[in-house]
Amino acid sequence: MDTIQLKCFISVARTLSFSEAARRNYLSQSTVSRYIKELEKEFGVKLFERSRREVTLTNEGKILLPYAQEIIDTLNKATSVVSQLNSGKGGRLRLAYDSTSLSCPTRLLKQFSAKYPEIAVEMVRLSGVESSTAINNPDYDFFFMLRDMLPDSDGIEYRLTHRDTLSLIVSSDFKAKRNTLNALDLKNCRFALLSESESPILYMEIMDIFRTFHFSPEYVTEFDDVRSVFMAVGAGMGIGILPTRLVENYRMPSVKQFELGDIETDLSYVLAWRRDNSNPAAHLFLGSVKLDSDEDDMEYVI
Image 1 (tube, rainbow, N blue to C red):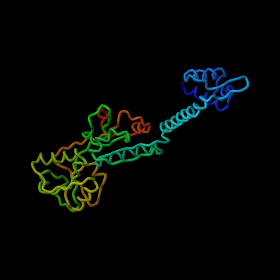
Image 2: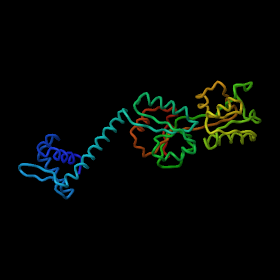
Image 3: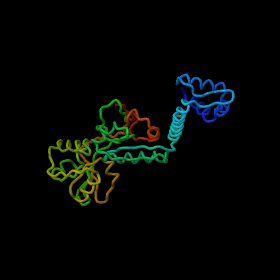
Image 4: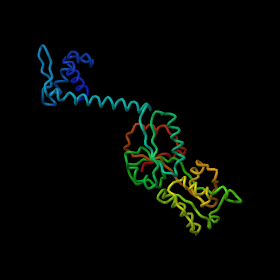
């Protein structure tokens, strides 16, 4: 059974005329008759009663008609939707991001929306832990996240979006003699940090800094969102340690930024997706965005 057979059946059923069905489908009358006979053979029933004067639907034909129409309508709708998506005239993307990768999604979405303004985009913030488990959820098309949070799965593909370092943020009232602070300058300071549950990799990197320089802060306040960290730092509640691009993206007047002078840090961020993602809008997104990572590091498959 194929769609042309069903279309011929629907035309004969609606017009009760083989010749008219042939005209509407741009076929010969003999071809329409052959298609109807093939359908009758496949179902094992007669679909029409035919005489020299008239054509009538059998009871079996009457039962088949709404189902045949539904199949053709669904196919037409699917064809239209896919065609619109491939031309960028409709569709939807659902993106998830962790709070430390905010700057990259903003830049890539600006590129995408300029080219495909009619595709709706929904953004959902997930914690680092949530992202690593939700990546197998078909409700999401893409994930912006730290590379080290990717689960080990053959079904996930990703591209490196950028690399980042860590910077210090302090209250604008903080007094310093230079633009770079060393780890030893931080020994007796209070800290306002993003919580381990919100960003496990970032938290681990910061704890490694403390261990490397053999000190453990006495006062650490943890927050579950980046804005709260900035607010706490601006209020003088502690020093924050966050990805450099993220700090530059916020630019709050009550907070100023310092480089970590004697510490090398390297955070790798990725755009990840399920290999079986069939959303046409997702393929348009991948084809339209430009990443600033080195060409040799652009694409990976886990």
